[in-house]
Length: 74
Image 1 (tube, one colour):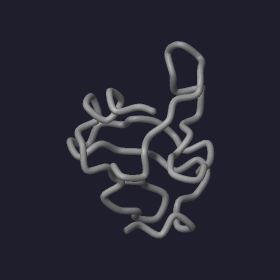
Image 2 (image 1 turned 120 degrees about the vertical axis):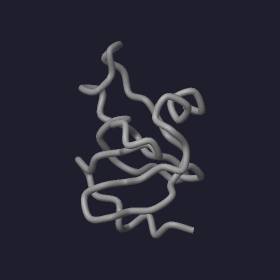
Image 3 (image 1 turned 180 degrees about the vertical axis):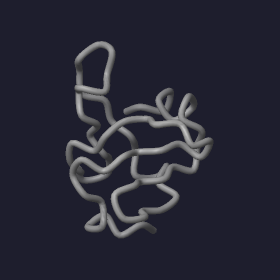
Image 4 (image 1 turned 135 degrees about the vertical axis):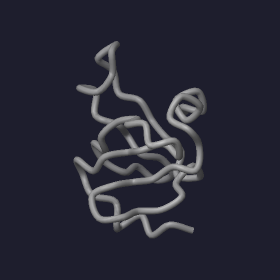
């Protein structure tokens, strides 16, 4: 289990394939809210914390590829 307190606002969210998925706006209970500035539709999108493989400094790495991670959006 990942220590959610290590996830910083404005951290990059990167898929397992190295693709930029978004930027952390903030962490809500069981999900990360991505900044809406990264979204083509200008809306907030969410990633389940279950997809987090690890946190390294200002980078959140996911266990799923970037294109797949967005399909699991909550």
